[in-house]
Structure formats: structure tokens, C-alpha cells
Image 1 (spheres, rainbow, N blue to C red):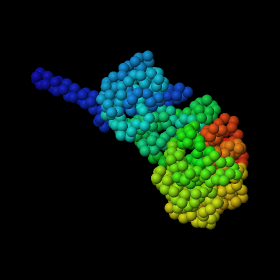
Image 2 (cartoon, rainbow, N blue to C red):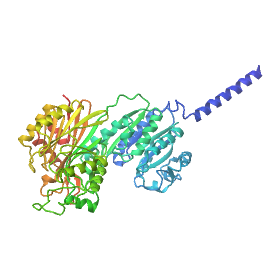
Image 3 (cartoon, helix red, strand yellow):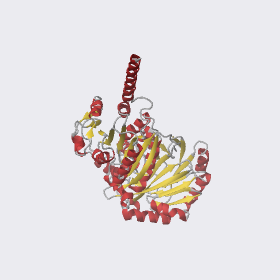
Length: 581
């Protein structure tokens, strides 16, 4: 009997050991993180947002209090492109010793085996605030956890993004949490930041990896790694904790010094249905000849928009009016002054145009304007060929495309042109709008009309706009006057009579220097509008309006525009929402 008891005891010990080993090595099992409340989260590293950082770390500590967190993996952008690897981990624990934390040496060793991706090097971490600024919070809320810092270089290839995610999931899933150390929009002001952040939150929540590549965030590769890691663990719901910015924290619009923050975590709850919006940014007249050609050839094709380049991130489509043909012909307007022959005859250098459009992610242009035919129909044909080869779509007569329908995120948008200076008549455009409603969910009309340098719309513009909306147009964008004109809400549809210039070589008044870009977000039941005013500097470079200049511009714009009184405050704030009634 005693012998049987001893055998049973030995058998129980063996079985217990077996299951303990399975528990230790079963990181790839279906229940590997069953007792973890959240496996990954997003935190700012800007210390202006210290309260947000503290709040998200505290939240993660509460969510994961049932099981001891043994490892924190901090993924940060490589802000200064230090070192040589696509991803870098520390070679020693020197970085962490001062913070009272321990390095996950075994984790570093595992990752370092992937030599085509990872480099081990202490030096890059000495100045990397994306890592260093989060260490005190790791110590405060997870004092016993080891830390595995990873710096990600910008431009990390897609295959390596997925490979890193898989490495983390396969090797570090049990009792580990991953934090993405990242700030979101930069240098684009509070209004545009709100637009970009909403797009980012929607994209993260829907695990849309393709759209993540274009978000306004300083660690795109890191965001995709963390999102893929969470999905591999079965944590499919992104829970937003806070969306703020340095402007909101400071209590004033900091303009191009603003940085925005998104904090949140991935949990194993069931995610609800995610809305898929479509985002646009519209600008006015783009002219790349004459003095602008001189500036581009001297400073580079993207220099004029260097200060606002992140404004073009995040949208599904950036759209402007291309005020002239793109040909290999020699410029006849360069270095001319008003009154001289050729001063108003434009042709844009193909290489400069390609670099400007590509550098600002402008992939759709209106060609229906009074300068597109400056070099004849052969110039129009060459323009179309150049745009096609550069991957840029176009619409607007006299080009060959009348109605262009873009299918974006399962929403069909028709783009139609009205060109006062040649092309389809009012009646023909009305027919095109009616026809477009058979092909598309929404119809946008880009109008080249009005009187140059008139800061108010004329009767003809109003009459045309109303007839287009009556026919079914959902949005009207105007250009040609070279100055900003008011907007109108008519039958719950927005009419922007003129956005002014987008990039032109005109400096003779504040009105021609003032420009308006409009962000448009299409929801299932409404359109949201974000007004982002710009200004052309003396050196030919575009910047955001800010401070009192921004305030006065929006106040005047609101006072001159036509809508019901409840919308005035929204316009002054720079945001407006119109439902589909």
C-alpha cells in the first residue's frame, strides 16, 4: 500500500512539473495572456504631457494588478537617426541603472540574433527622450519589471515591421506589456491637429495598417508594431483614455509649436463596429512658374511648404487647383514683370511639379481653369501624360476627364469642375451633377470663377452655387480670385466661394498672402470641416497663421460668411459640422 502511495506521489510530482513547464513555455498558447488586462498602450513622451503619461501608466498598473508584470517593452522613435540598425536595443544596463530599473538582458540577447533588423548600442539611448522620459513612470508603477527599450528608425520597411511584431509576440507575450512612446501631430496648429488625431484614433481602433502609414505620428513603424502585437495576442479593442495637445494644456493656441497627444490601451474586449471616414484637404491655386520657379530651383521643390509639410499627412486625398500646364517647354514668364510679354503664360517644369506634388502627397488636381491652356491643347495633353506617369489624378475641362469618381474607404466621391473661362456651361455641369449621383455617394464641385482680388463673392457665383446644390452637389470649393472669399451654408451644404491662393508669387497685399485650406471629413451622417488659414511670407515660404492674426482672420471670415447664427462660434474656432439632411 505504501509503495502505491509513493508511486502516486511521484506521478503527481511529474504531472505538476509537466504543467509548470507548459505554463512557462506555453507563450504561444491561446490563453497566454488570459489574466493580463491589457497587453499594450500608447503614451506621450513630451513632458508637457506629464499628467497624461502618469494617467496611462497608472491605468495599466490597475488593469494588470491581478498578475505580476515582469517586463515592459518601450518602443520609441529614433528621433535623431542615431546608430545604424533599423531597430536598436541597449548593449548594457547603463541607461537604466540611474532610474533604479533593470535591463531585460535575455530579451536583448534574443532580439540581437535578428542581425538584419537589430543593433545593440548604448550610445543612441543617451539622448533619446522617447525612452528616457518614460523610465520614471515605469519605475513608479512597475518597479519590479525589467525594461526592454527599442528605438525604431523612420522608414522601417513593412516586412520588418511585421517581423518585429511577430518576434515580440512569440517571445515576450507572457507577463509583458508593450508601450509605444509617441507624440502625434506636430507644427500644424490646434484645428488641424484635432482633425489628424480623430483620423488616427479611428485608424488605430480599426487596425487599418495601410492607413497607419500616413498618420501624423512620430513613430509610424512603432504604432504598427504595437497594433500588430496586440492583434496577435487577441487584444482587439483600442480604448482611448485621453486626446489632448500642448495648446490645450497651455490654454492657448500655440500654432506651429503645437504637439498633440493620444493615450489609450489595447484590451481583450470585443471591439464595436468602427466608422470608416474619408478625409480630404482642399487648397486653392497652385502656380509653379515665374518667380516660384526661381524659388524651387534655388531651394528645392518642397521648400515652400517645409513649415507646413505635416498638414498634408493623414488625409486620404489632398486636392488643389493646378493653375497651368506641366510641359517640357521653356518658361516664358520667368523673370518677367506685369505688363511684359509672357507674364501670364505659365508652364510648370515636370520634375519640379512631380517633386512638389509628391512631397506634399497631393494626388488629385483640378485642371479646369483659365491658365491650363496657356500652351495650347498639346500642352494640356502633355500635362495629362505627366500627371498620369506621376500617379496624380485630375479632373476639369479642357482636360479629357469630366467626372472623376474616387472610391475611398468604400465611399464613392465624384469630382466635377465648373470653369467660368472655358468648358462646360452651367446647364452642362448641372447635368453632370445629376449623372454623378448615379455613380457616387457624394458629389464635389470645384469651381474656377469670380473676380480677381474681390474679397466678396458676386451674384453670379451665388447663383451658380445654389443651382449646383439644388442639382445635388454636396460640397462646392472655389478658386481664381487669388484672395479668400466667404463661405455659405445653403440647404445644409457648404460653399467655399474662394480659398485664395495655395502657392502663388503674389505679395502686393495681405489679402493675396492670406490663404485658406479646408479639411473635410465625411462621416456616415455628416461632413465635418476644419479651417486652416495660411500665410505666404516674404521669402516665398508658407506658414500657419497663428495668434492674433489667426483670431482676426477667422472672426472676419465668420462675420462675412452666410449661415445661421449658431454656426458663427464654430467658424471662429475653425471647425464646423453639417449633417446630411
